[in-house]
Image (cartoon, rainbow, N blue to C red; front, side, top):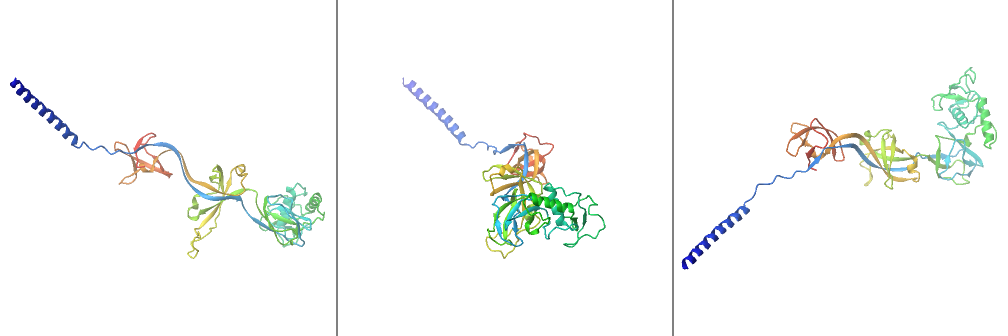
Length: 384
């Protein structure tokens, strides 16, 4: 029995030693550092998209083109229009001594009474064009003749109705001859509108405007002298005025399409009406603190559909100008571009291979890419 016990003891010790060695060996392996893992690379896919290089600027929506109407002649103002009234051709604008002051459209004001056949000038052209626009027959079309001094006649021996051509009132040095047919049409218009049928166009009872307008504000009061400032007019059309940094205005052109964001965040289409050539502001170092002296140009924008802004008379808006657009092009994040030491750019595949690319438009963190080795859906490494 003792042998057996001794043998058993020896076997137990030997077995324990083997287990212990195995356990220590495994523990040592767990303590040894394994191979370093490959750094994770952020990837993206080459996509097709539309790119637009745009910028958003603040603007003011409202009725533009303010014009002040100043009265002339004797008398007092006896009646005034309401703000917001529409100014139409041949209709009274305001009243002096209860006589209407009528709106005509043109580019030359009436500066003298028109009552004598043979008188010619650009003011006669305005009268002729307005009577015709109001539907009055003036007989044979008056001829166009070189302008003579105010109140003078023509020294031409040609008959007053020899030429059937017409020219605009704005034609430099050329006017229309006043004929008996025009004077008769003037009398009919005076009769139809309840005026005295004198056959004389009184410049103190007529105001020439550029076209259909609206009354923005009435500045005179009833009983004021006729020579006071009477009212201010604006265009009937609402526009957006935007101040653009003069150094970056070259990318904006008349006719360019824009997007206008209204106060309710609704986006509506528009287009550029005009780009001013007059620089406002300066880099004057003497300007006071807080005064923005950045040189700017004024850009006028017209909403495409007037119904989009029908309920807004004035508001601050945002205008998105698009300088360049690329349709259906391959794009990647700008962070996917690798600058090559020999020049140019490349995209990197996840395996490390570089593929050379040509770059196009950069916009909103994306860049247009092209090249023989680039296709939609390709996976490339990117830093962003």
